[in-house]
Image (cartoon, rainbow, N blue to C red; front, side, top):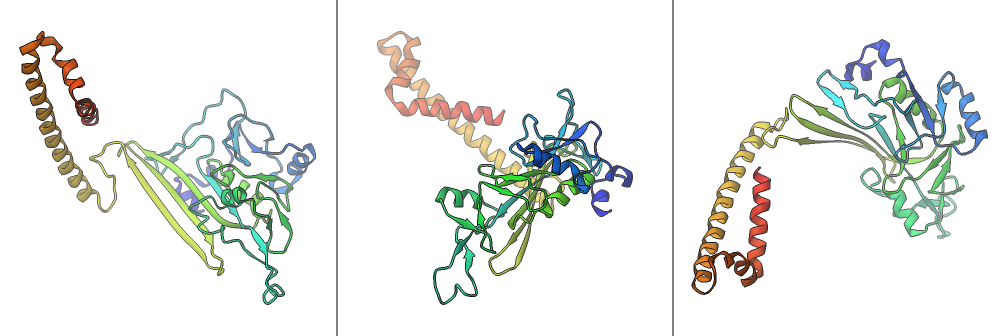
Length: 316
């Protein structure tokens, strides 16, 4: 399929799960875990409900053995996905509705969206609602606990992860992502926002890329979609294959030269002050006392030297 081609995988690889990997689900109830194992979508999968270092995920893929190493997945040959265990993850933000007390509107609209639920694709709406101590309901009027919600189909407990939301790992292959998505999509969580994110590294460009695909349902019913791609070049003079790479590269070089000139001027200024202090100290004390006198004479001298040292490390 198209997703497999974008990832640079063959169709046979795309339809397979990684060997020696298993699906992790955060379930403390043996009954719920047995129900999950019996679902048609999860039949034949190795599953576990306890695993170390799951990053607060409700579900995701983890290695079977402690010695299993997480190997980065190559995308289009030159890019390597670098997130641990699950190379792509999904963050959900669910809505919070409150009772409408105005008799003029509560017949047709018994519940309305809480004003705190806005901009959820870019911020932690669930965290704001929880911190405000709001009493939440679903659109249909059922009581809703933002800290932990129960899936309607699987019975899985979807817990809130601080500063993030409901966190899910989509594995490292299209088949693994499809497995988690089919499970979550049937649980009717009433998500107001969904964010997909992944991080890759390109050795040719010596650059990390952080990509986010955001979907947010507005109070009007409009579904907004947004794609954010941020590059982190480890080489400041290499801006990758972006359209503005030549302009940014030349700008960075000019600014670096200016930075060198200003730092050199600053170094000469500090050196001049040191020579003056050496002359003044030599008139009354041994010459080697000029450094303590320099720092004790004015506190800003200490700040100047500290800034000069930091500038040297930056240039290095």
